[in-house]
Image 1: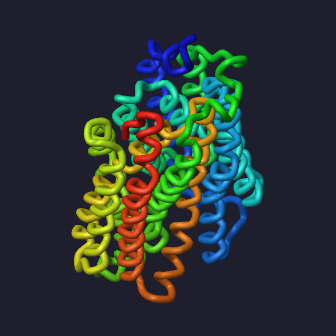
Image 2: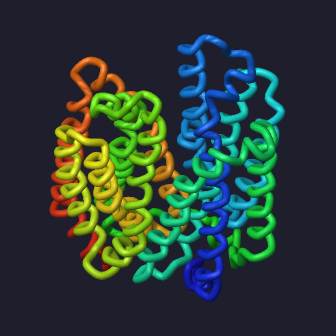
Length: 414
């Protein structure tokens, strides 16, 4: 009897295209509130400047916190009931909640609804579970890189859309537009996604005796990969809360700081868009471990000169280079995790991967803010770079110590 991946082989290319569109659409909708979030907080009755900043940060982070909590649960349910139902659940849930945010009565409503969006949403996370389970192993890096490009493009385009859309439809109307966009993604998913899932076969946990002799050695590999995924987002987000302040120290006029900060942030996403698919394909050719370790070292190195720039454009160039080097990590990690776990556990472990990523997205700004406040802004880059190089060393040790055992037991190629 064919396994899940073999049965869905005819569908994975079309499913990949739909998931890229859905991930792009949902992330545009979620990120377009960034330019006007403080303004919406003020509309909801918060007047003190310090309170506006605090509530804006809480509302923004609530979605990532919610996703980090529930991603493993949705991954486990995807293993049991199929991947397509999880995509539909995420799209419909996010469309409803996004529209409800436009009806928020006060800032508490805003935070709660953003949290609910994270708890029940996660279309991009569900897409990784589906594509990671269906794509042929020899094309997994490329496919996950394409999927990552769609998500990164959504995060890049979203704030740009959010910059002009409120002028046309109002701030509350922008959320209704976002909800409508996600609804289109939901309809596309329902109509076009194909999945051959046999609950009585694909959702059944295998007997321990059939799991292979290398099962015990796989968990250190998975733990190292989850830690690395968390570090990717931690490194990318560590400077985000203070980047405007840092740009101010580089001599940028106060009136231009927000605009220049937006440009610098966009450079990182743009760099990742340019190289994510290429580095994913490179992982298919030279091995995921080599791409992971190489990207960690290169990103750590590029972090260092960011601490010593004297002009904002220098920072923008270096952030763009960092985006290019960091882009290969998540597709290679997802590919390696897919190849290192039993098929019936793929969704659950890829769910843990999403949880690790969003945890890094929450922890990164907290760590960066604390280091910047107590030791100086320059040290944020130096500490983050050192952590990335240390992470590369850990991955190299895990590869030598555990991966060869798993490779000999299961013929895993990574």
